[in-house]
Image (cartoon, rainbow, N blue to C red; front, side, top):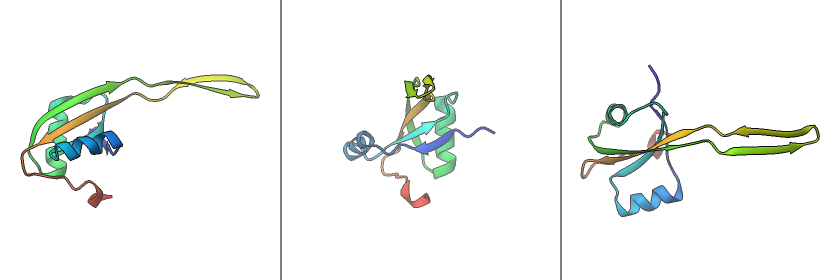
Length: 98
C-alpha cells in the first residue's frame, strides 16, 4: 500500500492559518492521492473526523548548478499539499509523535 501522508506541513504561513482557524492542519501528501484517500488516511492515523480537504499541486523548480566541469540543470521534485479541516473541537498533536 502506498504512503499517502508524507509529513506534516510546518511553515510560517501554516502557523498563521492555524492561529486564525485552529481546526486546519497542513500535510505534504502523495502526488497521486485524491481528497477521499487523504481524508481516510488522516482519520485512520489520528482518529479524528475530517470535514473538508483542500489540495494544491506544485511543479518542481528548475535549478542550475555551475561547476568547473560545466553547467548542470535539474529540477526539484514535484509535490502536493493538503489543508485538512477537522470537526469543531478536535485537534491533532503533530509534535507528540516526533
